[in-house]
Length: 407
Image (cartoon, rainbow, N blue to C red; front, side, top):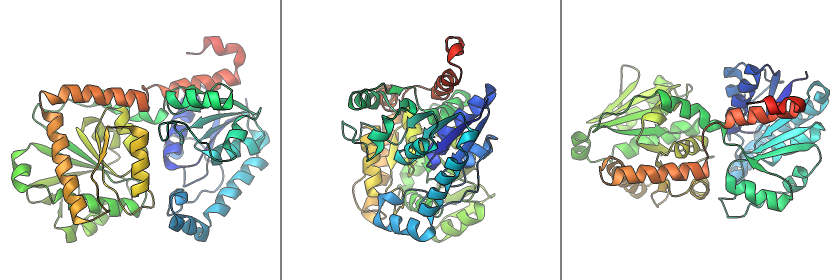
């Protein structure tokens, strides 16, 4: 059997693609990956062969969000790199039996250029943004080509909307990126009855993640000391390995924080536990997520966690990105008004964090609020199991005679 090629264009897309690829490999299907943006670390971590030479870009593939980002990608040669990756796919197309595109119009275009039978997981688009999805040109035309055998959406509203627009079946199978954190939830221990836990998620792309984390530390310093001393408050930061202890100490020192025991920042009554490679565990045990990231916020909402945004300077987590994220993920995501990094905005966000934590711990408000957040997560993200559902659908395409036997 020829290998299946996972084609993805983004860090979050790589994660979903890698989860599906790993599931296919467990079922005996040969798989390779072609990440268009970045090094495809999620694939490599799961033992999925990555095709060709990869490279990263300072915008993380999000240059389209601003003029500055577009210019950065142009100067760094990102557009030429992506074109080269697509040409590599075209040259090697006879090596594969099926392409699974994960992402947006660029991934869809790549699957079409391959000339191979393809399945498309449109994780980048949702009808929740505007109520009716307006696909960028030429995505609609591409999705109606005969080579596209299956289209999977990121939520049920989008599936219904696109099925009508394209006049063909668009199916919602779930979101694989939720599975990796839902597994951590099942393993996490319950919090003590009075414990409040705030997760800090500054993102995965450097140098933006470092700037974001510094902004979070400035915010935490604005929490009233009396309130912080009176609360059983646990602060945990989910950091990428590149944001190591020495780098954290360098950015935190001027802000009044000191590094202790290489994995703990202290400032007065506050202590931030630093966690590398512990994102799922930290997210699962939190009661509030202070987030400056894309996929991580979606995972939090999928778990029924309230999300508090803190707008940064980008290139990803800008005011426009945060506003679009709120439309995508619904009322479980909150953001204080004001310009990025201003004293007023940080103070308002610190106050909102206190209010949201208080609501979560309130014996009267808490249960109803958590039930409401769980319903939002189910509507916007879906239930766990997307990885297995997509793998089964892919196997049905590869082995149609055995489709009825698939789980």
